[in-house]
Length: 266
Length: 150
Image 1 (tube, one colour):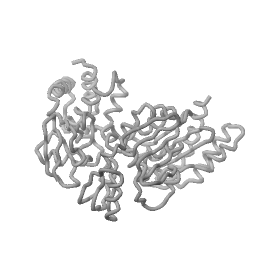
Image 2 (spheres, rainbow over the protein chains, first blue to last red; image 1 turned 135 degrees about the vertical axis):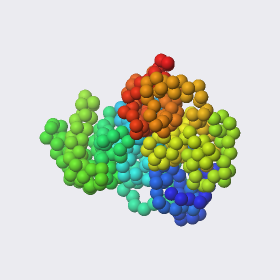
Image 3 (cartoon, each protein chain N blue to C red; image 1 turned 90 degrees about the vertical axis):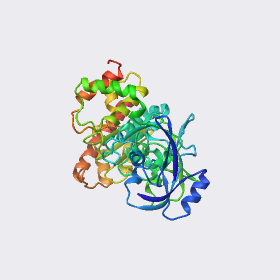
Image 4 (cartoon, chains in turn purple, brown; image 1 turned 180 degrees about the vertical axis):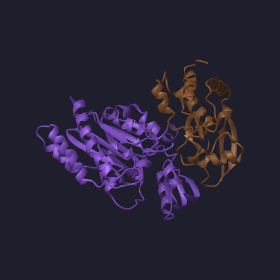
C-alpha cells in the first residue's frame, strides 16, 4: 500500500480526528496485510504509543488491547489457560515467530481476514469488541456487519471459559493459509465456527442449535450436526482447495471436534 | 521524515519516506547482512531483532522503529562466530542467503526459551526458510548452539 503521511497518534481522540480528516486514511495494525494491498491512502495512523499493547486479566474476563501482537497474545499465561489453550495453540501456529511479533490481534479481527486463525477460535467464545469513541459489539455481530467503520477498535474483552476447546487448521505446510479452519467449544451451549471456507469465519448456528437440543449425544447425533454445518455454511473453490474438498474437511473435522470436546469434558 | 533509533546499540538516524520499510532503510545504508528474500513476510531472510525479539524487517515500517533497538548479526559477533563454526562443522552452509536471518532467530530463541525440546526449536524457527538444504545439518548445528555443546 502507498501512503503519503505517517501519523503517530498521541491520543485516541487525535487518532480518530486524523482518521476522519481524509476519506482514504487508515489505522495501522501490525501493518502486514495493509502492505500487500494495492490501495492508496493519504495518511496512515499509528496507535503504537497509546498503551493498547497490554493484556489485563480479571476474575471473569481477559481484556486484550488491539495492538497486542500475536506473539504476546499466544504466550500470555491467561490466554494459554483459556479454553485449555486452544486459542493460544491456534494463534501460535500462524506463520513464524517474527511475523507474529508484528501482526496484531486487533488488526486480524478488525480487518475480518477470511483466512484468519485468530478469528475462528475467538468466535466460539464470548468476545466483545470495544471501539472508540463509544461502541461495544459482539465479535459475531461485527463479522456480520457490512461496510467500513470509522470507529477505532481499542480492546477485545474475552469471557473466560474452563471448557477445553478444539481447533484445527488444515494446511499442507506450517506456512500455508488454512484450507479450512474449525473451532468448537462447549460451555453450557455448543459453539462451532468455520473459517477460510474461503469466507471469513462464521458460526454453524443450525448445527449448534441441533446439538443444544439433543438429549443424548451419540455417533448419529454428532454426524447429523456435522452434516448441518456443511449444509448451512457457504463453501467455495480457490487455488488452495476445492469446494468439495472443503465440505469433506468440514464434515470430518466438525465430527472429530465435537467428539474431542466431549472426550475432554469427561 | 527523520527517524532515530539504535542499530546494534549505536544511535542511528535515517531520512525515510512515510511508507519505507526497515529492510529498505537498512540496505540503503549498506547494512546488507539483512537480506531481501521474498519481501512478502514469508521467508524470514530479512529477520532482525526489535528490542531483542525477531521481526520481519520487510514488513516493519521504519517510522515505527523510532526510539527502539534494532540488532543485526553485526551486533552479536561472539555468538555469530560460534554459530558459524557450528554450521561449518556440521556442513550446514550452502549459499548462505538465509543464514543471517536464521542466526538472529536462533540467538533470540536461545534467550527466550528455557531448555527447549527439538520440537519447540523447530516450531520457533518455522518462519526461517532455507531453499538449499533439508534443514538437517542446520538443525544439528542449532541444537548444539542452543544447548551449549560447542
